Length: 624
Image (spheres, rainbow, N blue to C red):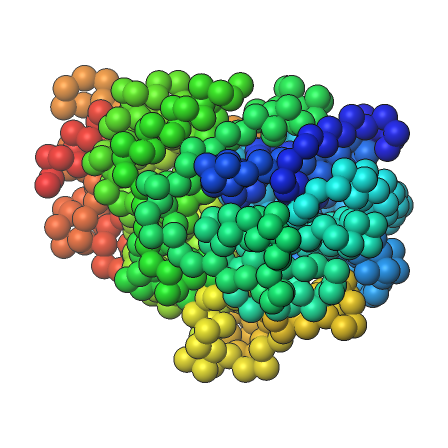
């Protein structure tokens, strides 16, 4: 269902500042950054209003179609394409569209789940990211042009209304594909209301990218870079005093004490959310830490999210419980997506037990390292953490060492088994195309997958992106990377005068890479991942150990194409399929390996079976 501009109910309350949440931000959760700035401003006696432009755009194009746009491949830069004409006068969908439209046409021929095996989307890993997509329209040239036309209309109409409200400051946040949408409105507001101050911030304005954003439009008075809670309040005060900063770039600083930040209030989001989302699970966002404690020790080579130099900081368990309780008391949902790069390790002891007792009925999503123990997985599930995004990325230890994950592959397989045992949803991805990789590692992964059909499959098999702030970008010579340049699609979307070297987040380059040299291996791996996903979608098979009576074990195996088998095992065999260990320490290892009830990884007999939680706990504990 879609609407027209005249029918949109756009409330513009009086305030010292209006902050915009542009498309293509997801509809199912609020924008935490703007509400954090709002809370800091209110604590300082200043009033900030938030307008969810993404919800207005969804009303124009229809929420199901909007969700399809959000779930497009990252490298399409679809949000920027849809607003490029509105923002800087580009031709519809960008300056070069032939290759892009060819990919759109090819994607339309792929069944929905299979489409996830070739690329990452902005909802990969996010809770409910594709909730509206099932049964949605297939994106094609005509659909995209219709949406693009609505982008121009929205920018014209909305900017006129905002300019007429005469806000002293109007700002927009930009994460993922929101830069063009934000600029399309801010530029028009500035022309209609020259005395107002226009501001842009968010993840796309971090570090050098602030310079790139500023290169797009001189109508943007200030670009805020980095953590901006303090500088934003100073900026508002200066603007209200008639003395806005003369420099176009405003650098924030890492906030030293997250406990000191005021509590968020998401009332405006729930007031503005599209009415057709009443049947879709809504979420609130909550932050318990910044940075990444693992990155402070050894940053993963491909990760640009945990920018080095800022240091890991976390909130106390007391403050988390206090603020989260207040947010949930004011929200119509008890679904909470934690925005952390990874959950603080000490929370397993300090926070998780309290969530069970003090926030019953909450449904949490958290990013985690993959080294969780069975007890930790079970405790998280009891605390309401029904889904997690673990940093798995590979099923071969040589690849994990190459990217400095700090874990062997057997730990990844253990987490897949533990999650299946407790009923926890895993949202994870497989990556390929690492600098210095070996095609044999992917061959081994492809050979392993048929034995794993009873375990949660990845959402995507995707080529690595060279991302800003990652070690690959910070120290390319260390990894043999040369000819670094912004990902090719940036030049297709952004104007000729843009400083793409500063603006871009995703890059490409030349480097030694075994998987590039043997793409037939990746083709085979893609096929195996697709079969894994399809098998899981049909109803996951089982490789489950059960104990019907003391001392008696049965193993149910339905991974094959037939009706399955039921084997009666003794305790030595049961321990081989459920506990494993170094090969020399597992008497039944040869039998388990021969029957694909376990696999050999790095000199270990790695078990593949799941079991009821109590049985895994008992047998694992007996061997410790």
